[in-house]
Length: 294
Image (cartoon, rainbow, N blue to C red):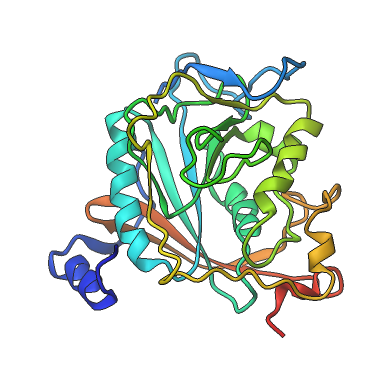
């Protein structure tokens, strides 16, 4: 499914398509509007807001937040693919690769929480995006989710998961809405469950969850790069993690994430800009002893 590590590196560096740059990625081009369908019966939702004051007619700028660790081959495909896809849609975007650089078990949620402030005040909405999911259908819209949280990989479209409360894969939120939901829980270490926990956060904040409407499903709308034989997931449950994984974290999230940034590097991969942040997460071992492999 992927090129070998050596071959992938050769392809990348021999053609000079990736190089460290001295500045952050520039602002590539979105005024997205989409047809949406409600996930659940109508309920009161808060008015969409960009989270910052913008001049009339100012374009929205999306922060694509990609939690990452040891997925180099996938990254070589993801960054140029997403840049081309979003550029075709005239969608202004910055891609942030949030590399978890310490030795705790991988957390998908905490790097996203860390990436939220690191994406700066110029971005007004985010996409929580897996590195191994590539949008293929031109019917998919990555524009500003004005009506509220928007699940791009809805239960009808996701390549694997089709249950009602699944909000994983690719989720877009205006930044203000993400703050009101308090991001994602920092209690999840290892693979799984953090996506399910954000669903009650969205509902608890009073938002409707929207999903694509009228997408043709006879062709695959996404490409899933995951190879289970090559990329084994850390599904181990340690100590009380088995019980705690089903609880809603009502206190922690965006407001409580503790981290440092070891480095910030601007890269071009296949001519596509991205920013790589080496994130050093902190773990409260008294609260979540399962953050370590011991």
